[in-house]
Image (cartoon, rainbow, N blue to C red; front, side, top):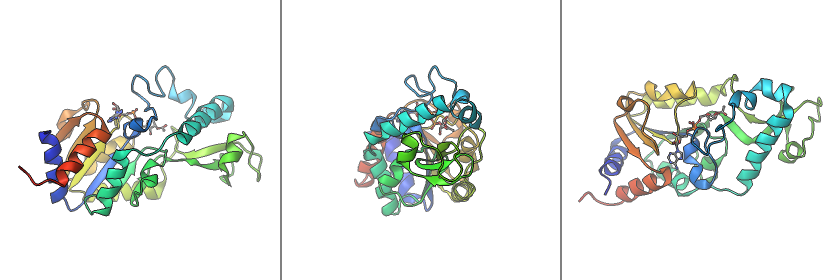
Length: 242
Ligand code: OAD
């Protein structure tokens, strides 16, 4: 028995407002790589040459190929047990909001209702120039905007762009009220999301394959795979303490 998993189950049972903050490590068990691990998408690549408005405008080929490959990878993937457990906890009243940096839509697909997609959604396509919505097929066939002829892109947040305001404000509001925040599968290296855990008056739990950079920021840390740890906590929620 993992004593820390038992402790998180106890926290969840006591907390009246629990927020989950997720990053790319939440989806690696679905077969989607994260960014900064050894097999991550940024390994050997400079994100500034791909995931910025400047890259889109000056090297659309590289930008397009990168996001097309990510969309195609999602065709073969689906949410895993960890996503489903988080959705179930929301339904059962254990958690109240998910703030995610992930653009894969897995939390929604798993049935999560109260969610802020802080970096947007890769499946939503729009024109970079006039914002007009476009279809996924149009983007995949490298088509142009039918309104203005502009370049199509996923409706995600690129480096240097603003986060969607409503989603951001909702996350701040929820995290400021939270009694418990579970930070799952994120390196917390990208601002402004990296600041969110500091805004809670509540307890902070780190669930990640790696140790946090600042251990002292967290009340409890559990190292391991998100899906496996969430499964363990879930089992403890349904077991009386022995
Ligand atoms: P990172 O790749 O920076 O961090 C992922 C974290 O998850 C790492 O600490 C991994 O050790 C951990 N991890 C990997 N697999 C795991 C698993 N199965 N269980 C638990 N932990 C696991 O990804 P993010 O923190 O999400 O933004 O990155 C934040 C932002 O940077 C992304 O949204 C993206 C990226 O550049 C943009 O593209 C604008």
